[in-house]
Amino acid sequence: MQEVRALSRLPRLTELCFADPMWGESPLAALCNYQTFVLFMLPKLTSLDTLVLADETKHLAEATFLKKQMYYNMRIKTVFRNARNIIRQANEGKKVGKERGLKAHCAANFF
Image 1 (tube, helix red, strand yellow):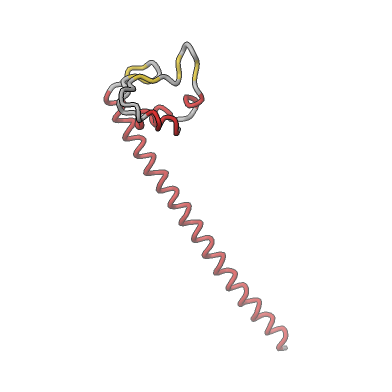
Image 2: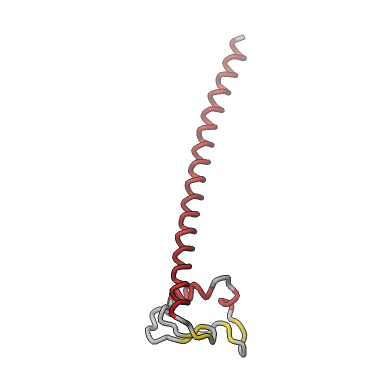
C-alpha cells in the first residue's frame, strides 16, 4: 500500500492497471477493497483496471474509505481501552489477592 501512496506524487497519472485481463493480476489486486484505497489515494485517475471511472464512483470510494478509517480508528481505541481496563483489574486483583492472603496467613497463625 505504501507504493500506491508514492504514486500520489505523480500529478499527471490518470490511468492505472493492477488487474489486467491480458497480463493478470498484481499482488495488490488480490487484496480486499484495494480499488477503494487506490481511488482514495489517487483521485485524479480516470481509469482503473481498464475501466473508465465515473465521478460518482470516485466519490463513493472516498466516502467508503473515510467511513472505514473512522470505524477502524474507533475499534483501535476500544481495544486499547479494554486492554487498559483488563490491566487495571488485574492489578487490583493482585492487591486484593495479597490482602486476602495476608489476612488468611495472620488468621492461621493467630489461632
